[in-house]
Structures are given as structure tokens and as C-alpha cells.
Image (cartoon, rainbow, N blue to C red; front, side, top):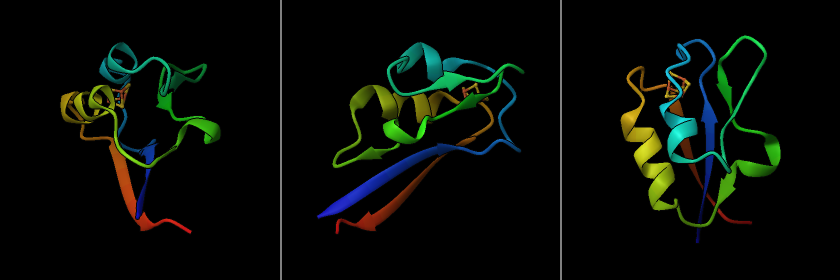
Length: 71
Ligand code: F3S
């Protein structure tokens, strides 16, 4: 089994907020208006459709997905 870890690259994020629009239960915003994924929201056994859409909709390609074997 594979686990997916979703994070936002703070260097790339420009605050377009598409991620938040698609998946408000996963993404959050910091005080400067940049997105991040809170620790407790990062890991998935399968990527939900709305998270996939958030990833493909980010104009900066700032949303990163790491794939690793589940423990
Ligand atoms: Fe940032 Fe992309 Fe979301 S630029 S705010 S990660 S849509």
C-alpha cells in the first residue's frame, strides 16, 4: 500500500487560493495569505478527487505530493 503526503511549497505559492476553493477541509491559509496543509491533514491512503483538482488547478504548481510505502 502507498500513502500520499500533500504539502504546499511555500517558495512557489503565490496565494491564488484555488486549493482552498476545491478542498477547504485540507488546505489552510497563513496570516500572509499563503496556503499550507496542517500536519493532521497531510496524509492520504488515496487522493480525493477534490484534492487532485486543487493540485492540477494551482497556477504555480505549488502543491506537492510525496508517495511512500505505508508503514
Ligand atoms: Fe498557493 Fe496554489 Fe493554493 S498558489 S494558495 S497553493 S492554488
